[in-house]
Length: 519
Image (cartoon, rainbow, N blue to C red):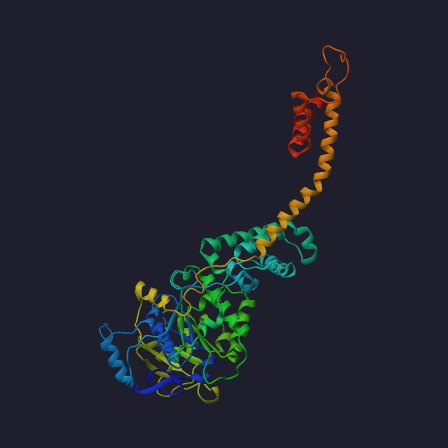
């Protein structure tokens, strides 16, 4: 279908081709449906379609199923016959198995290239969301970020943030007068949450080299857009980390990309799977940020597609920005489910051939109720669509296949080795060391003078016999020997020199001082 991504077949016998217009693909979309209704396959075929149209794609692989995009499907697969039958039904005459250019990424660096960002790039709002901080704790975090800019202390990794928080706590009385109250309890709470994040493996996310957004927007020499697949199966055990990272990535795209207006096709399509995690217990400031990004990022040529089980998982203000809709089956087991089903049906432009609410409830696996934007951005009439079969492998791939794809990636080796350059931790450590040296240097002259005074005081009470001697006989009997060359004299001179040093001062204060006090 020229200028469209082929979705499947609609109409009475599913013979009418349904597609998503590329020039409206940046108007965002929604893919919803209960578990097991085919959302993952829909994401897979959309990614294939965008890639073939030369549009780069970013998606998260929550169940390791989407990794199959890197491997061609096979005629020996158990679903080959059903796929061929479906292709015939919907008029997919040129259906063939093929692999697609895939780049694997992983925040933990195990199933793909490592993905890193800096603490400064993450920012206090998203970091507070990730750490689940209270309003007061978020305020202290904002102060730390402000001081990072003012003091020239770059925040690159977690040890930088930890060191800066310690410095803020040590200088809290002075800083509180400028920025507001800084409590030790708030700093302690932030430090504990940072420890939890580290225990979850989140420390590796922060650092350098940071992800270059241009690496997510590559087109291969054959004209196909590269599909970036983020391994998220382990990441899902930390839902807030997952949602915050994807939101950060979306925000970075919004801030960094130039305005392009309404392009013929998107520069990037971004799939946000398990989107409900983004909005669960989210503060209003965060939801407002998501709405702003969704409303304005389309002018940067980026299409965002939220994938979730129920449209109610997405706030209404955000839902209103999603023009392309693919609704798989919703189950109405409870009164709440029935209300959600009715609300979902009301958002579609009705089709006289069927009742939309009944269709959403009754469509089978691999079938969906769809509505795509048409001329002038108007929503199309709702249609029951049989989703086309995927050309790539359905399901997970082997470790060897993944390793081969990572090794063949154009970014192999670029992000493998972490770089730890001078930042807040190193600068604050140097400041502390320099301050200690200055304090020691300033105290040295006074300490030496005190040692001299204590030594002279010790001589007055120590008697004079040890410092001079008289010859026992001869003409010089009774004559004082001014220079003492005896062994005892040498010991005395050595002791005097030693007493001028730090060790000597300790001896005088600890031993002689105690003796004199006893007198």
